[in-house]
Amino acid sequence: MTDASTPDISLPTHQAWLVKTVELALNHRRRGGRPFAALLVRDGQLLASAVNLMHLAGDPTRHAELEALRTASQHGPLKGAVVYASGHPCPMCLSALVMNDISAVYYAFDNQDAAPYGFDSSMSYARLGLSLAPPPLPLIKLASPISAATLYGNMDGCDHHE
Ligand SMILES: [Zn+2]
Image 1 (tube, rainbow, N blue to C red):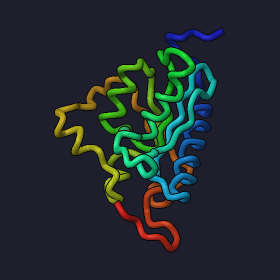
Image 2: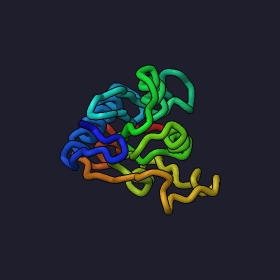
Image 3: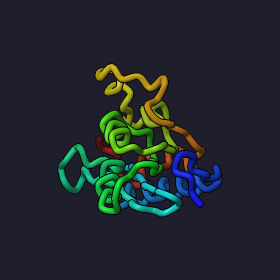
């Protein structure tokens, strides 16, 4: 009983997925990774749960959203799937999400939230001449269970290096 054109997902459900995403990002940060995570969900099923892997691979393209796309693609076409991201997608990830027919992105922190910590991709959007008004797919900010400072700021006893 699912209508692919109008996914009937309630706001509390979106919020619950996003809370999981933010928790994953925070746990990843505590283990030394960059503070980003993404989930990819289709028809209420979690197809991929991913974190930013730049620190392991020395590969600046291994953003959480792209990792989620790579994993979820093993389960077939992604048309109509929804992505939950701890941070607003950068232009590289947003392009890949659009190209793969992702229906919407729900995220916790926007570029303004992230800018004080050096995680702002708005300059890249500007250099590429990409406007988000209107956005190429719904980009919806939801409330986060934790603050941007908790996720992006200095952790106890460890310096924050970009
Ligand atoms: Zn990205």
